[in-house]
Length: 372
Image 1 (cartoon, helix red, strand yellow):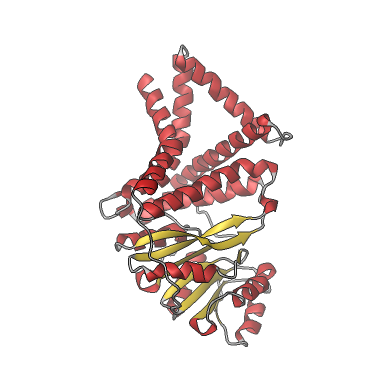
Image 2: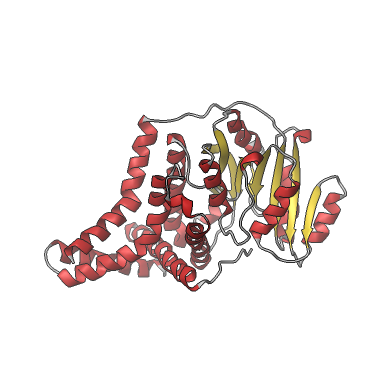
């Protein structure tokens, strides 16, 4: 039991503290700067949409106002079996010279993106979603990184609005800030494992068709780029805004989908755990260990309960206190040190609970569908 206790403790500590600290020092002392320049290659902005009539007009107007030469980018929207007013909006939009692909049946995001990629004319393909709004200079800043021939994929930075600072989500907001820092440090040291799905770009020549059931295009495509010995970098000046303030329940569902996608990736691309993946160590530390933490938490609790003396008893008490704080966080206590601690505890439990559910989805074959 002692071996189980220390193995679980070390896994949790390294996943959430050891790896980020290692990344920080690696990026700080052994950086690989990107040679940026103001370049304006032909770009295809690709947007897959399903029942997005509430957001689509605003997003298309947003794209039209981007600070990028008009004759150097095209916008291609794929409607994935939409049943609301999305297709009507696209029909009117096409009359102004833009392009749309209308899929009569719902096939999923991966198939929609494949249909768009088959029509893309740009040297660079930019992926974005319907809800988030791009800053005027975001596209120009994103594309500037492709002046470096070693760069194959670039991630923008998602910035959450003030409305997203709801008390119940402050802990998750802290987790998200750490996640962005880790991606930035990974990119500074070489390549990031994933990108921001709401806004990222890749060289068209490096993008292969996605398997039809792919959940995480924003991990699958960057890993394919890395496999071809190109870098995936993070551009903090390519800002995309999202004012949505999801509830804890919505965030839980989102993480279940994301983590189920990580499990799926191990099946679709088993090479990510082999020498064929130049970022195998980073992928295991950043993605795989997060999937193992829920099991390590159970192992830590059971072993501490079994041993129950000295340091093991102390750890058991701390665990019980931690989970009690998470329960308190459900009730959104008022500001104060206890409120902040309960919010962080709740976020930790929500994220790891989602990882456990994702494992159940994976082993039972339940699919995490693309939904609005």
